[in-house]
Image (cartoon, rainbow, N blue to C red):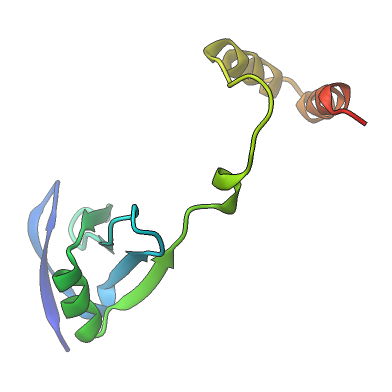
Length: 114
């Protein structure tokens, strides 16, 4: 079994088994590759950016690999004004009520063109 040394920002150097790491490769050129693991000392999930060389070494040694894609909704056209801090505060106030769902449905119906 392959042992890997990684660094946790809280605990410093830690030793992991290769199956304790997950390599995340970006499906787009603007998404850097990375790897993540759960620190065996403090139990925090740690994510570190990784070069192509590191990705190849980790995957070649048996680490699990995932592909990351930005959500398709980011490419959609959006109409209307941008969200403001006041909008966010108003939403927070509505979500604190017991009738928040009905209020949001009514708001969406009121602002959606038919």
